[in-house]
Length: 513
Image (cartoon, rainbow, N blue to C red; front, side, top):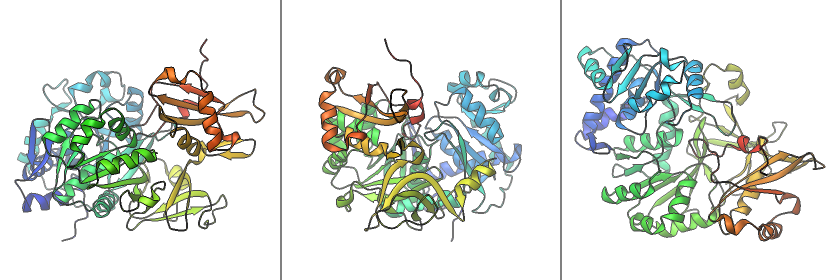
């Protein structure tokens, strides 16, 4: 039987292994039979009260209700719009108005934020937890009951129907609402499962937010495999995540590189205790130091460690297997099954091996476009190819190399500098935990722009004198690529998926006295 829709694999597992645990959320645990029943109940409730293709906002932490909502809205012929748990009221307003959201699934935890959002005040709420704050609101638990009692048949759907809109700010300040169909979502999770060899024995600890592409992809891949997902609310308390991972005998853990950097730097002994039980590790699309990759391989010799490259618009476009492709650790890997990647120059001509240019992606994973923005869609989708805005090249062995965002390239009077290249050098220096390099305006510079590095370090005192760091950089890269300014900051501003918001760093900042 061909299964093209998001919820169909869950129906199959509910029939084949109804009593197997699908989700563990704190003290709560639900089987595949129970999970499907909740999804069907909520889908029935939604279809009885809202029109087809209505957008259903989901503002929740990583919890059971969020999982049910993500599957139930598309099953009801509607479109799920998950939102980051830390979303600012201003961005919440934008998402509601831009996507035309007709109802919001949330909890009492977020009511204060909703009161600060003008658009949210007008929406009917479906509230998980105790209490219903106003007339146009419903209890999530009552909604499940009402949906089952109504027994309204769900609509006929096709794989090309939009199932989800993921709002992504990327590294710029212009939010984009990415439309993903049932087919897109299924293609991505199929690739994750195939590349990593995931089977029904997987038990994954999932701290990554399921409101984002990375975490949502892991959720789908595990559930489609018939495994078990242990929901964690982020990596705010790493020691708790590691303790739960050990206690519940999880064998899979996926994080962005910054997450693994925290574990390998500050919690190495605790991580070492559970490393041997890990079978599956996926690492998100951001730069990771080579020494940390090698340390992870050493600590987890039996794990399938895969790092992906992709965007919300084309998730998991390429994969690199650390153990099997050890000789190519500094690359972004090769295209996923059914995915094509090519490099084009500024005139749109396909580049040869080693030639730099823009990365284009084609395949079933590529989104159909941006909600309500046909001009933006047309500007990035051309003849089925997604223009990523990323720079890179493909070597003679077919491996993709990333050079960073095209708009982030620093132009020093006609000489182009890749921030990623400079960042990789800085991260080799002892004591630097994270680095972001940008071009900033300078009236004193002949070119009008200089290179500035923002650093997160383990000990600020050690970096009072930067002479040693500058000498190190001069040994590693050309003099004109060495940052002229350095600033030590507590943390780098990032998106929910771990990508640095470089536009915030490049903005003019008040000089400290």
